[in-house]
Image 1 (cartoon, rainbow, N blue to C red):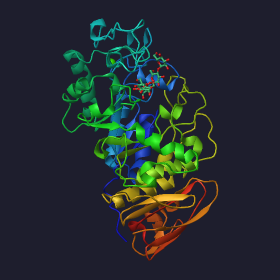
Image 2 (cartoon, protein in one colour; image 1 turned 180 degrees about the horizontal axis):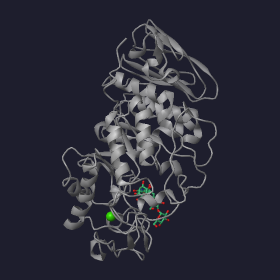
Image 3 (spheres, rainbow, N blue to C red; image 1 turned 120 degrees about the vertical axis):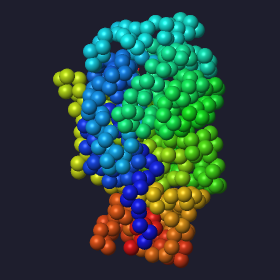
Image 4 (cartoon, rainbow, N blue to C red; image 1 turned 135 degrees about the vertical axis):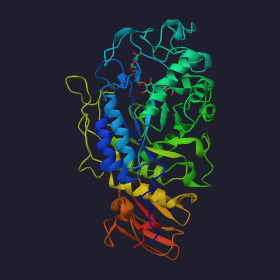
Length: 468
Ligand code: ARE
Ligand code: CA
């Protein structure tokens, strides 16, 4: 067998939504590092408005690293403990705007009003677009409204101003000094691409940037392609292609059915794309497959992680029935956090506030291993038999998925060398092999075909590092 290089993480990250810094530090050591993730994306670290809702994180009131998720010392400790196990930290950077409410006191004690943040910004540092009655964005087909009016009443910073840019960049440089590798740029669509670029130009050259520019309908003038000069962008179209077909029990990802894998309309080039099955917004909105879908969610993650398109980010949040409900907090408003001990896969039911712990699933570790072994082997056109569909990473790895509600046996052509393989979905990291025995299902490849039993709403994944 080909050995997996355990020193080198997979080109993939995990978004740990509303997880406190102490909890992420432990998770890096116990799960994320060993599984082979390259990076973790955190929720915003800066001071924010008070409240029990998760989205208070997206209303900054100062750039002190002091929030419901932890103190600056805890943040720095998380970064160094994650780095020690090979995991970089990407922080969510909320820089388009400040608070949406009229006035208040932030969680670190900073008193503010809508357009006045002591020591940082005053009235003149904000856009007052004058294009709509309340200065809120009303029409996404107007670039000027999208970028200079207020997104849901959030006080919109004048990111064209040199002093505003420098203040924002200073806050991001401080986070870099604390050891973060880079940033998700929240609401990047709402800043001119030139403004984002100007801010990024004030950061160290090796800063990793992932801009959130939700691909809107064709009539929206602001498109993700404008932002690829500053770094990568989240490609929302990937999930939109992936999910609905799975929900219907069929695969409709255009590249799976027929034609070359490069035939992907409406996608930025692979090197520019961060892809995801869902995120904290889409699991509360447009996502067709989320943690509520159990095995289908696992399949969606498998298709993403085994693919050769983009840099994937696995999503890990908590269960909720109220869209606004925050993660469980203590009496002081600090998020309590959770660990993922004992979690090995999706559950049929979750209590509200319970962590989903996607990063701890046996299958995810196995898929990260497949991703490292597949390396730059291209994805071949899809193969299928009955309810089972899948694809090969040229002679190195194979993924077969069964979105139907019945177990299915499938026989498909494959370029993997002959032999017995350990399925890394059921077998997990280490090729599922310990002391020569496979902890998962074994599958035989012979004479250019493979026959496998693929469980209902399940998957089989083979790679040449897990040949027995
Ligand atoms: C909350 C309340 C609001 C209130 C506001 C101010 O819900 O009622 O007016 O506070 O007091 C998050 C939450 C919001 C929350 C906000 C601030 O989702 O509910 O508002 O935090 O606390 C657009 C943007 C995109 C944005 C989405 C949500 O383009 O950037 O809207 N996503 C990011 C984050 C969010 C976050 C913010 C931005 C704000 O990921 O979690 O909001 O920091 C089409 C368009 C998209 C558009 C989408 C939805 O698809 O193409 O561009 O996304 O519609 O409108
Ligand atoms: Ca703006």
